[in-house]
Length: 432
Image 1 (cartoon, rainbow, N blue to C red):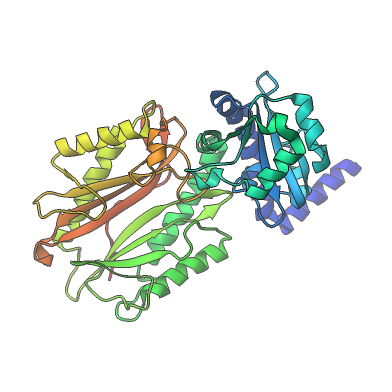
Image 2 (image 1 turned 60 degrees about the vertical axis):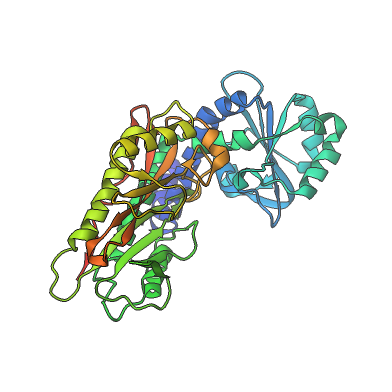
């Protein structure tokens, strides 16, 4: 009877205190356990790493701190993963403590940081992965002083076995489990709903509202919903015949403006990256002008080709080549570089289909010119990817000058190809 009463009291307390916080914590625990059970073994073995040490120092936490389960670090602490055979990686924490970490059900052992040397020598790993990376900031969390401390504590024998965990970190983070995809879908719903409300008469009054008014309204929605962001201030900007006019400034939104949003939200360690487009009707107009609508429609055609072309099992570079070949065959012109559009009577295109996930710009395989190292990584089922493109099409209403249409929504790569995680941008939004 006491047990039943205690359980009922717990349910009542949770329904009153911290219900949303507890919900999010439980979901993140599920993600962590799934990742450690299902992804970590293959990631460590593919990269030939026997032990992975993630070091944290008070006031200077590793970028993977949330992935690992957080916790309190008084000085220096370690998350340690050891491949001891079998289908499970041993997980230990030394020098890190706290309710959220210890009650998460993820780790096998909690100990003191002073145990590090004995812990490692007992397991005698041949290759020890450390978060040192030239190409990926998220895999470069180990500071120089922490590296020196590890070398001193473990001695020359094990210091000689240190290797970069760059590719391991990329694989571990970018190969997604179902619980992560569920969270990402939730993040996507919040992200596009706020963006589409921002580009409506609920928020914008032509001739009165400024770009920064819209951006601050969006920031307030993040605050009210306890959402993070990888990008700081939302990019709310105007694009005219001569390019971008202003971004998140005190520029007043006027009739005839073409508006763009580029932003994303973060929830439970999942971050989106998306864009939306709107047109502010002039007096007497009832719909988007034909030239602007056509430019948007050309962008949608490009998006459809990208979606149909990208498949798993090839490198990101091979996927990029295939996409541009398909676009060229469909009559589009591949630009030589970003914003290097031409005067051709064709739509000029450049793509930047980058990894997404634990930041708006993730650290997995990337079909994007601005992630050259990760163009060589293989696309895998469960990778999250932003389908991002820029299409430049002539607009008669602008004297034939080209409108840059940016489209971006987030998807997951499956065995079938690209699949969307939430309703994508279907149209030019209209502000009356």
